[in-house]
Image 1 (cartoon, rainbow, N blue to C red):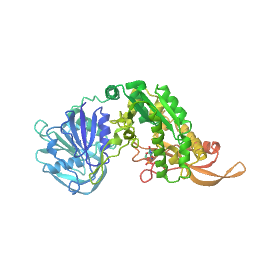
Image 2: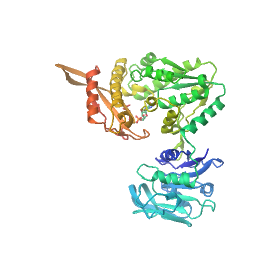
Image 3: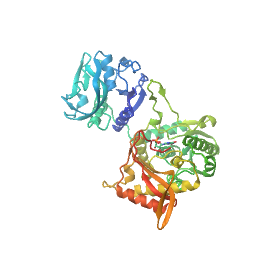
Length: 517
Ligand code: XMP
């Protein structure tokens, strides 16, 4: 399959470039700047990302441009553009001040293939400390802004003549660059010649065939969490190997109200063979008196693996462990020293202990692509469009120690909030739930005074948390309608025994996080 390679120089928006390219129905891989795959015949073009560095920083990342220029069309974005200009004989200098925010293109060379359909006045997003002040010989300017003369450039030589290079000082991948998608389409489709063959349908077809090939007649086990990724992975595998897939769904007691039963029913409706394990008793015991968030996480993580392993061992001659790992979990991200940080999301050493091979059918997908694949597989919308939910569940939403009674209170309050979000219709006809990235209720370790009828009460407070986000890396608190919040607050206080006060969390991430623990 044709692919675009995105070389990552450490910018925060590199993943966004990848998502934009995928939205153009084109496969792409994000690789560390120094890991260009020289012998990959599927590569049709290369994008160089931005970077937190200046090309003059000692620690900045440099590459052998000769490996790519003249062999593939190349687009440099921000640092990528500066790097090429700098290394090929142009000049890059510190801008008077860091330029950050909106700018508008002018003197656009509309005849250039990169800028087809993009007019003067088009808004772009700038974020740079250096600026290109002179282009290498044989290069020319194709757009400016009022503050940046060389906002976009190209080589005069074509690819066949050893050129085929474009650079843009702005960030076409971010939402604020109005015609950014058009620019990327011009590069990916127009210049690189993508056939746009990457789609949910083609993914399902080729992945099912690959899985059949890879797994043969082997048995596979998979841990279901109720979340989108593991559910889509399960349905995909089921399509490939049917009942040779055994799914295990562990109830650690910290799930949402009725979630275990509801999700089991959904899974069975999908034809999956699921072993449901109610292990809540042992988790409550292990968590008794534990207040520290990271210890809670460790206890739940370790307990989950123990229960999972016990069940997995009952599946005779299983050879594979399948996981819903998705692409952002695997991208080798760079830290500031250029070292590659790689996090493995294995189920705690289980594959080694049980001598299982790993199967990760969603390993190339971004989250929105997982959802598209789920729709392609005809999965019910409420399973596909579910908000993310943390593995340790309500345990990290009960501040302080955990008891069954606290979980009951939180489940009841959370159920009112989430059902309310699903039922409330916005002006666009969609449920409020679908406008929110993630929502939940936090049980606070404080009691406060209230009145109920003629009685003075002294009960718990809860906080509602709802955020908008695209990737959970940053998040804004959701501006929920007041009438909705009033109703939810009333319902919680009137119906949830033990709660007499409801607050709304209006903190963004950063500096706050989405969860409270
Ligand atoms: P924070 O609170 O770090 O959360 O802003 C970002 C996203 O990660 C989820 N989260 C977790 N998911 N295990 C998980 O599987 C965890 O321990 C965990 N902690 C946070 C959180 O719900 C949000 O979607």
